[in-house]
Amino acid sequence: MIKTAFFAGLMALAASQATAGDIQIDITGVDAGRGGVIHVLAFDDKTAFDQSQMAKIVGYAKIPASGSTVSGTLENQKPGQLAIMIHHDQNDNGQFEMKGPIPQEGWAYSKGAGVRSLPAFEDAAIEYDGNTSSLGLKMNYAN
Image 1 (tube, one colour):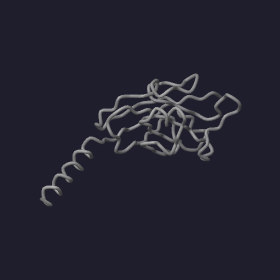
Image 2 (cartoon, rainbow, N blue to C red):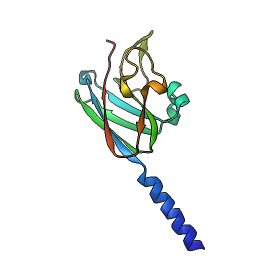
Image 3 (cartoon, rainbow, N blue to C red):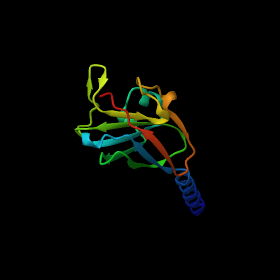
Image 4 (cartoon, rainbow, N blue to C red):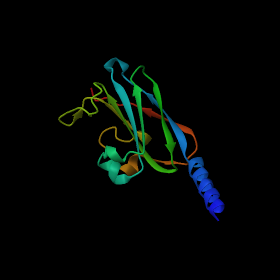
């Protein structure tokens, strides 16, 4: 009985790990001359994304802003809807700098959402199948 439960647990663990994959994020249009880092955040929850609840991200990568195209990996992502948020943190202080309503740092969202305003989860969400894949995003700058 104990052996059966143990093996059943191992099978369940293996199945859950088999459904998680990595997403390579390729970001173009990076203004590397601004310095800093690129934060890549993945959300699977509408409220967390819409309210930028960073404690509820399901994936994160930090990439040096070292060229006009940079890449990072969101590891072990489970299948389902994901919205990707990207922030070019020019001074690496963890804050998205604004001057009034105008962003002072670069940004991007999955599906090209949010060019003119903050997108809703539905506008940025992609359907991820759990297989290792890649996603290309273009950085936006207001100034």
